[in-house]
Length: 182
Image (tube, rainbow, N blue to C red; front, side, top):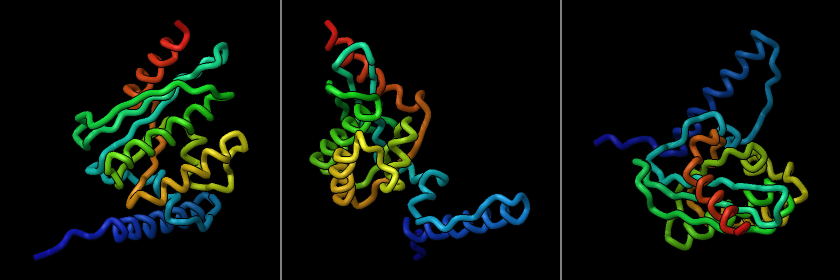
């Protein structure tokens, strides 16, 4: 009986192929080659979509103090597992997105999910997951907490996606913003 290759083996194969591709591009076009950790490939490779998918987004209005964050956890077939939203007093959209991420990870971990794919449309948030040395000062303490949470997951893949993909979470975040104004 043949066993399917493990996720680690797949990741290694993809990483090796990616490094070969980057070396090829350097030879042909002169694009620089950098040695980076395997986690950097998570932006480039499609994750295993059989895992539960967590979508997060925020709604931020600079004219008000309360801002909303929403998150939706779905099966790989997009059927809803959990969802939530919360109001935050924050100084920036990045802070709201980071707080939403922290809250969503806490809830899904408490519900027993220890393997998932996190989708966000916030490039800075995704980059901070990949390179903690570039953590913006305004969210440094929050990201410290997120890194601790991340260690509790067996597998957590973070993917930058478009706004349309996180739309359900964005709608929840907008509703919280509207409710906070009323």
